[in-house]
Image (cartoon, rainbow, N blue to C red; front, side, top):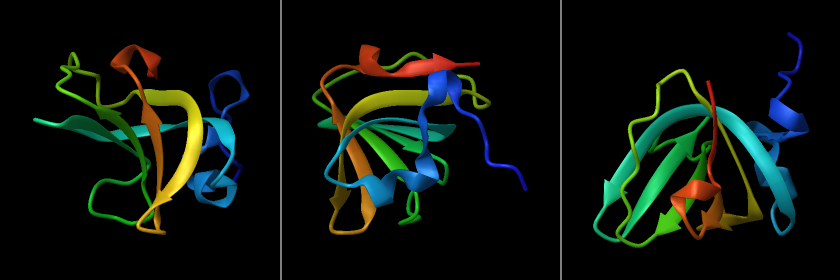
Length: 101
């Protein structure tokens, strides 16, 4: 099966864990958006609670307009492993998400 090509040459969500500790632009298919009082969690590739997902985390009381389920999402930041397992990138604002339909 051929490897997907992501917009503007982004790193694939399923490769992010291997790049923990580095700044990367990562892309993948949207699986869910969870808005809690303390932040937004945008799950890419696989949905929560899978440990193999990538999550873009935006701390604070943000609101995000509905994103079409078929969207590809990209963002740039430092990749780290939450609890040593789940690849995450913290963003400062929802407008740092690139939404590709």
